[in-house]
Image (spheres, rainbow, N blue to C red):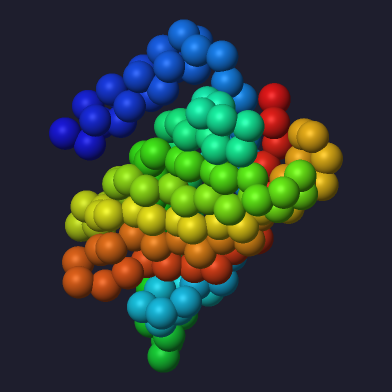
Length: 162
């Protein structure tokens, strides 16, 4: 079921990207796990791609897909396995000024780990600073509600407009 959902999402993302004028962005981020995640993870790495359509000069929306990998750690001699998520979301960005952007991604984070992680509700508020027309530095908080807990992190990343 996950594979079917993932395939449909990727195909839909491709059709939307080819059918409309907008801005395609890709990026990478690193983060520190917080809350429930800090008990079993030491570090987070991730990537994101989105395609944003202009609703006005200041407001953009569009689909987003990403990857988050929570690197497991050893606690009291026990190795905690890593866990991964594939967030499929709707992204919104609001330009407060030429330099600063506020945004949020909301959707579903598919669990990719074989340990019974089915995923859950995904959310990611962010603040961005436009270094140039093509590069944005982002400070984010992201979380996936999973099995009564939350896989969350605070991250720093860069997005590149293509």
